[in-house]
Image (cartoon, rainbow, N blue to C red; front, top):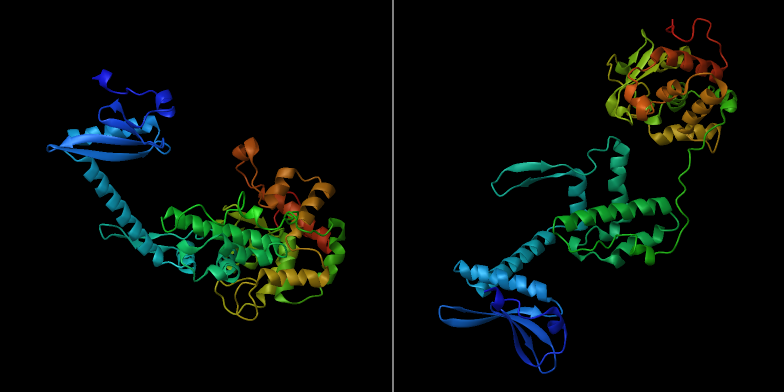
Amino acid sequence: MARNLELLTAREVAGKLTAGRHRDGGGLYLNVTAAGSKSWAFFYKRDGKRTEMGLGPLDNVPLKKARQMAVEARELLGQGRDPLEERKVAQRAKEEAERARELEAAKYTFGIFAMRLLKGYTETDERGRSRRVPGIIEGNRNPKHRQQWENTLIEYANPLWMMKLDEIGTDDILKCLAPIWTTKAETAARVRGRIEKVLAAGIAKGLRPGPNPALLRGHLDALLPKRQKLQRGHHPALPWHEMEDFWLQLSALTSVSAMCLRFTILTAARSGESRGARWKEIDLAKGIWTVPAERMKAGREHAVPLSNAVVAVLEEAAKLRQTDDETELVFPSSRDRKPLSDMALSMCVRGVRPGVTVHGFRSSFRDWAGDGTPYAREVVEQALAHTVGGVEGAYRRGTAIEKRRGLMADWAIFVTAKPADNVVHMGRAVS
């Protein structure tokens, strides 16, 4: 049997052959026309009828693939099935699946699909069981970042919003990006990435064909003008030896945002941690502010020792309380009792010292601790709630809370220029 298979060689197939059929064996033939074009055919007999099934031109179907297709056809015949009919059935199924995909895709505009992707949706499987598919932004703990996804797509991808998902092309993406590509570089980069994510999900769900028209490398970068690289530097920070003068000016402000800013500086906390602080997190008896894990960047609970200066800020904030509810915000907006916005603290800083950021005060603290004190690096890093990696992070389980109590007390003394006579550093609690 082996002598009757694979009669043709690769060289013969690729070379010049006379017009006609050239047998490879097992029903496989290479057809050659008078013009020299070549194509494959599989001949078989079923129910006394001889049938020819085309397998495709040689340019698309090399010798090895043609032989494999012939093997599969012979296997179907051995099972009592007609290879040509099976191919027709498969083609009809493919066409039906494509029509179903087109009908499904027609249900979705870019806007509808984007909102489902972001916020999640409920789907029903073939057994009628429902399950919820979570949105891609649900894992983001920062509500501001979650809202930015939706806002940027609505504002800057507006030309796409009512378009069918499978109709969006490169020119449509350019309409969104070109107006902001050089003037709002960072925003444009985020918008492009978010559009790419939505379309990639559409491709993965079979709702549109690939490739993705929002891809940057090797695609949009050839069509959009070159721009300066995004500047990703450190947050502008106040030099630590200028903190006293800044504090004197800040202390003259009586707004809730100024109060929250003082608290933020003295605790070396992130803005969001301070703005979201609630009274139930504050233990004045122990002199501890415990920030729950869900509000921390690293996802771990963080205990902050309270200096006398911080306690004084909290006593001032307590005068603004309207209830005894421990879930009440420490620094609520006076307008709606909701958390202050990040901009509220930023505007407060600008009013005192333009060009400095709220987050930059953490750098001021770090520089002061590193350059102006003998405190160990790991103590300072823990005060900033930074994750300590490597072997040191693997073995260190403590929080150095008492060492940090002395550190934060010294920081408060330095910033406010007010010695705390009733505080003993390095191991004694606030009295």
